Length: 165
Image 1: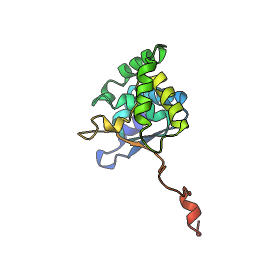
Image 2: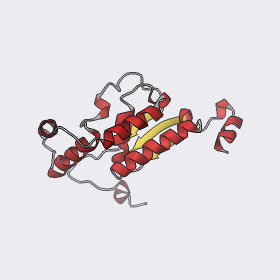
Image 3: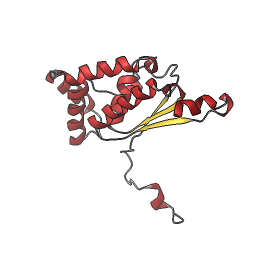
Image 4: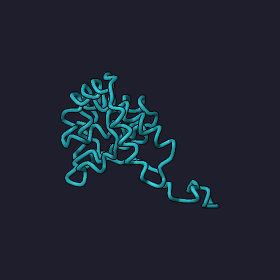
């Protein structure tokens, strides 16, 4: 039904489609991966302009954006992710080394240590996917991740600072 409606849309009037992946760790990662695979099967993934994520869904995004043409092989990447998740072995020394390296940041907390170990245990990797070759030609969908400003001493929600809201 959606595919049929999109065929009727004139290219000049194409809607901007954005996908937002939720937070929730492993559940969010798997849910976003499955959603993207199904969108590809339905012919909708090529119409997506932005792919946004928080927390666990960014884990999915980090595995996808390692491949420049991930939208063309999202099904294969899903199988690779399943293989990665089903392997129980991991290198504790490598995980410890990565956490120690990340701990050099003055804002690194005990929560960050725990999260780093969990992510490494699940994905067998640690690191920001924005540091891995995304500065070049990205194509679509363009990735958007959320983050918090931990350096700020007063973390207030934006609407609390506006009396008119």
